[in-house]
Length: 322
Ligand SMILES: [Zn+2]
Image 1 (cartoon, rainbow, N blue to C red):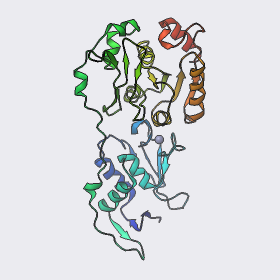
Image 2: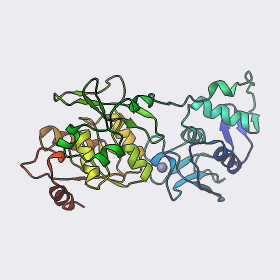
Image 3: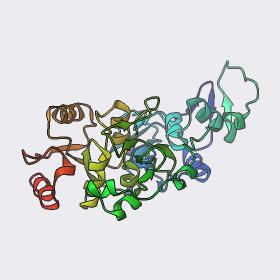
Image 4: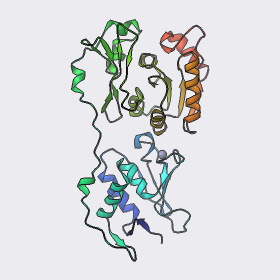
């Protein structure tokens, strides 16, 4: 029989029992499925797709033949990514989205643990103080102070419905269009802006850029998306009926990481039809997880970006690679 080790302790509670307790302790809907087995327990992966995959693909090894570390996990879908495989402590981290310290203390305080030979017991642990602080984002009340529409949005070919759906706003004081960015929990992360008078774009440089509309993709478990640079192009793609996300210019490493962790399986690139756009496509192809397929969409030569396309041109371009 192998043992579940956490630092100098051995946890004697069976892993299946820990998993059932873990599921009850989570408020994020992870671990929907737990299927017991003699060698492997199969569970819904806590890492990819926001932890909401439909068919459980994550294996936790509980066999006794030493083929793997006892309690270690590996997801069939995202196992090659950081977070897609590892020790049982790492698994708990992925479930709570917490620190290693918290995961260890949670295990040691909730379950039966024995001190390994020669190890000394530390001071009692205050689990409350280690509780992960959930990021709650910006105050959404500010959105209510903005207007839901400005004619400039119409000039960019956007409908009132699509702007309302993605909570695009107009800030009359600064004369700017506001593009609220949310995470899949609904927290307001950032509010990039664009002047209605000048071609100026405003982005908070002190934070990691979110992926625009990725929350919508995750919530709906969309597998195939279009990717583009700017928020206007992104809204246009969604208006044309294809889930579309945007990078606000050059795609960053943190954005690629967010996409890798998501439910997305195929990305159709529709960056701007210029040299920079080509570079973004190459960069994305180099850095994206190997489980995601990248299909390059060629825009008609006379068109500079997605926002420039008619509905027919958009679908003709996309249908060539779909
Ligand atoms: Zn996974």
